[in-house]
Image (cartoon, rainbow, N blue to C red):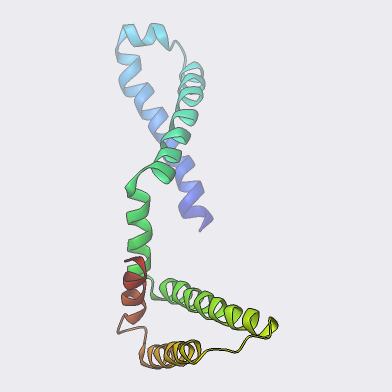
Length: 149
């Protein structure tokens, strides 16, 4: 993973700097005046490029719909990731419902018939869902789609 992500990136950056300098800048006298040596070219390009690319990455990650689309595609293609998210959503729903029941019981209130029916209905729905879903039938993805709406 380190080789394909980081080491390859460093090699690509070195390759780009070398090729652009020796094939483009050396052949144009105007550019050669701005960047008289390869070292100066690397320093200036790095000083401008790293902050610029960091800013572009931040904007991409935080401010555009592109990141959201990447995450959606990740859930669609990685069934294990979708399963983990669905399981946590189910846990939160159950915990919130059980917390309501515990609070009522701690105040010596009776659990109403409607609350009991709602809890039973939720139990049946989740039991059916968890027993019917598989990694192949993509019910987890349908669950996530229904929860977003």
